[in-house]
Image 1 (cartoon, rainbow, N blue to C red):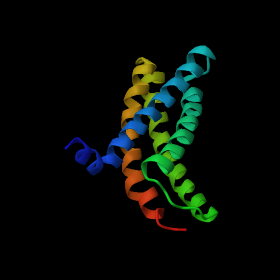
Image 2: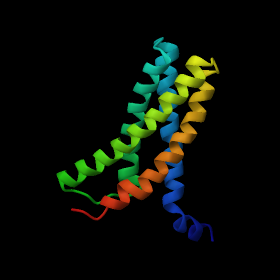
Image 3: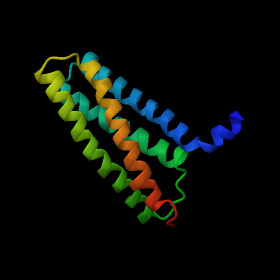
Image 4: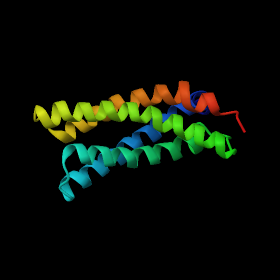
Length: 139
């Protein structure tokens, strides 16, 4: 029964797992940049976002959605959609961090976790509906 459930919800389980890993990459990179290197909230947020996007693209393409695109033009289109959608969510991340952590002084690590949850939800919808589904069968 567990095997049947896993197979039925495999994509969602994998997306959730790698979404959590992506959030950890984002949070760890943010922590290192802001605490160990002393970079500001906005700079740390932006650099951590890039690290998370690179990790998420590779994990989602290969392990979650198992994209079969091999044609360079199709892969670049897929990547452009992925990064394009992520640009919208980084704007949300930056806005949340600016308003709540930078301006209102709420703990930045707490706000980074809250922001990551909202970003993960938005990215999940975009990945499922726009990015990998749309381009999965092109070669």
